[in-house]
Length: 503
Image (cartoon, rainbow, N blue to C red; front, side, top):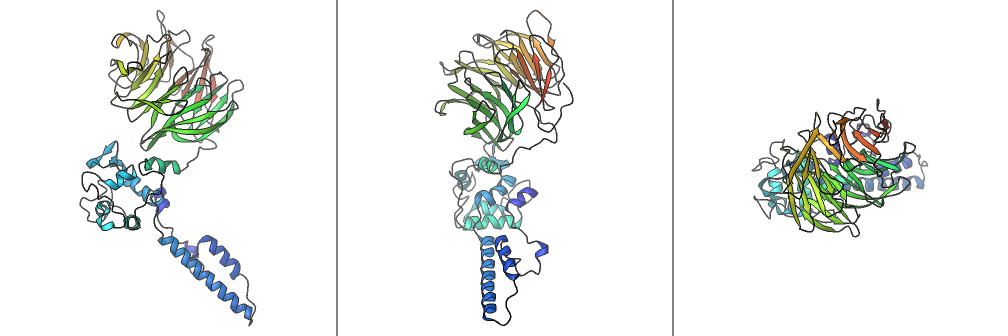
């Protein structure tokens, strides 16, 4: 168990400096009051002295009783029990890995149990009849957690007391993902200044082209392009922001991300012209990261996907779910609507790209030529060509209307292709990768490597007028190129308090 987890739920030990003090057992507030009273010397030999000491004695006894009550009160599931289960049990009993068919990430699932002891995992009020308690006790058969040290006696005792008190859930919905809820409650904030570089893995230009948004640590930073100054910081986000997208009208900002291996979400924020924003809603949740989010060109729908392999479509007007697409066998890491909004392309770690046709309600093309994870996907200007890039380092072009036939492979990078975009002419392809290069591929001419090598070139964004290209790097910097003049890039250091070395 980690030190942080221990501080969350283990009883607070007394301060050694309190030993021998009459008020050491009192709660902090009562302790302060007691010291104020004791500090006054009572009048000698008077009736007031007796009254004073009687009052002080009553206060001391009441304070001790209050302290004892606090130490023996019923444990809270979210405050006390959940950290124990997260650190010791969730690794084997979640939707990703439900050993013995036991998924305990919802409270209903925790109570129900798995293949062994189904229906008796928890018996509120009776720890001895609860299989969950039986297997965590010394000598439990089977002993849980497996492949980890046994729970400490105080942890077992706490869970026993919680079950004996009724095994109550103090969240909102017994069917919700309480693991995700617990991580959200931690409220770990974004740093004021960054002690080291944070890779920029997501970028987006505002629809009017005046601002750019960059991913940070549990936040987004918004920058005014004309001045290169920070306009705002949107905080309270997941540990990692994996993708961001503006709605076409600029009103909404969609954010996909998560705390890897723990929780994932798609959040919708109101986007204000002055660089501020307000959280509107959490659109989707999962027990691992969301990686991709995209608005349809007309702004009426939004698509999101991630580690659960599912693509979800929502209506923007109501934020209600419209469709679920389940056609990938591994993480879905990138999404792109066709220019007319009738199709959706996806890239997956399963080694394929796919195109879903909304009118037909089916996948109409699968691109399997990479034979390795596909990281990025994009539609050409007229929607007749789809570009993909992946771990094989190649950029490939496909015809979605010809059974996913590969049209060409214009070239690649020396490392993996992490992102790609069609250029402003609608025909050239711009790709970036973990070799730090940003390269332009166009028919009939050699590939052009843009000046200014990055650490890793994680992500690309093209301004609405098609003139400016931006790329986020592993060093926390954002490089900008003027695609018409093709001059040396200019650098924006998007990590407050940290300086990027050079363009």
